Length: 339
Image (tube, rainbow, N blue to C red; front, top):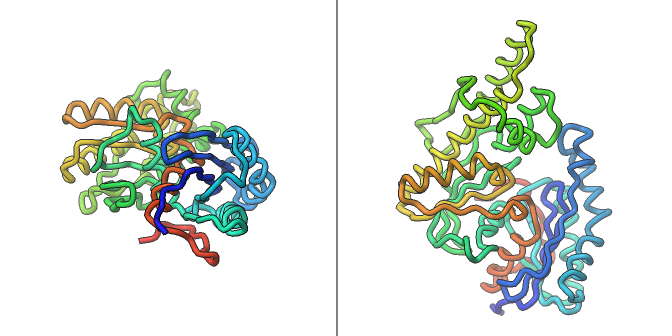
């Protein structure tokens, strides 16, 4: 039966954050708890899937109970559950789905499976004062995804373009490794870029004229590697800040240009940027300035809602349950985007 949930518990375990949130009547966020594994995976220079899934097993019950406690409710008070079903790391997703099934089906409560990428788009509505208007073009940019979508309502999301190889966040991590910087690379490169010159190095931009709304960052990553090796062969100090600033600018230029062109082609008035890389201050500033020049409105979630979190899953799940789009007991996870 279609009905809006009153109190919804959401679970997110798509990658290396164990997260849970409680949402009341689709508008009041009562709690949003995130347990990060960044310090654990930093030792390995990237996410180790087996370790991530084991840490989710250790953390999920504690995180969910903390979310309930902060919301001032009990599990018995919850009348619906939402969980990230995919895409993501299979082992991590299974932990979250299994826990959500136990919470929902044991008590006869409805369960919604949420697409992780679409949930990032819904994060733009968590702050009412900065929420976009439908329709809008949304860029989801993170460690695992760089994709453009047209969003007509809470349940209508149409694909426009995606990356052919590395996601933007993945490129940041790989370039950080080339430069001997710690993981995760995005925040470090962003911080060092402030002291660097954005035009110190002329790195390539992949415009892909045959598929103008697709992205490619592998060539940019290779160019940085070749530049670093050339500098090393000259036996001089590597200008890390300049390399960071020039690399970041190449990524931002492509993200901004393709997103704006998509918005103009789609005839929309709003542009939204979500996902972990949406926290990058240079990207936010450049996108906002470009939108103003084209007469478009721009929005992006607060940084706490850009990272993987339960709040975005809760809002996406609310609209699915409200419209009767529920999971059955034998539903499984999926690792890649479905058509």
